[in-house]
Length: 320
Image 1 (cartoon, one colour):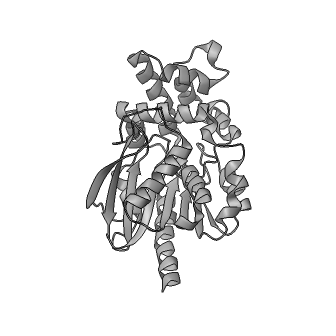
Image 2 (cartoon, one colour):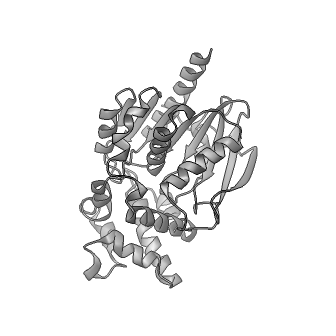
Image 3 (cartoon, one colour):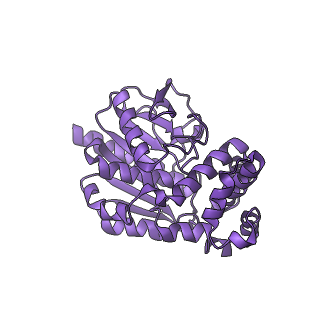
């Protein structure tokens, strides 16, 4: 079974001003002359973590990571203004041009898969390959399943803690209720709601419990950006047209693709991956039988590292 590559540090980092007031944090790792790959983190709002650099052979890939608007080390922290899907797509193009990259592999999980698909459908000529994990189509039923009714029946004790900040009279629309709390003028109210929202995901993200993951999701800096930005996107239908991703999937037919999804993914159920594969049959689909949603689960790591290795071979062979 494939494991992560050894830990590594960036050889270059920079900040890129985009639509005011946003400024993005960008880092590059691995081989400066290698095959460019863009890592797209989840959430939206989660930011990048050091282990995200380790899915790629650093002798083969030029690894580019960035924190999306309001997330991680990008500023302003947890900012909602000017934070839309189209803005993020435009940011990706701005990064590509700033780094002098003609085309690249795009690698994303969860919301990163959403953004990767939207970007690839908008700019297919700039994408050499797509490696996507934990597919999230952002359909109304996907939001309803995890934030309103469905997943809570599997984790009822965690669901009760997710419900706790919301008055009973408002629980018929949890996303709307949380949006009110997360945009409150009261910092204490915002932070309490953010931790409850974020911890709900952190506790359900993997097949087996992981205290380290839950601790990360409960941290104030992480939780505030994650909860505020996620809820902002979901309140606005993720700034997507109804059925947009599946409707435009025909644009992906010439892009080599790999889809990796955990069988027991409770956050983004496996029917997301099957729906995508139906309209993009050219992609390789891998359903991991002993995994949930987290990128760090052994079976997911094995599939993703294998995918990055095989993608590089395929692209480099095609260029030969």
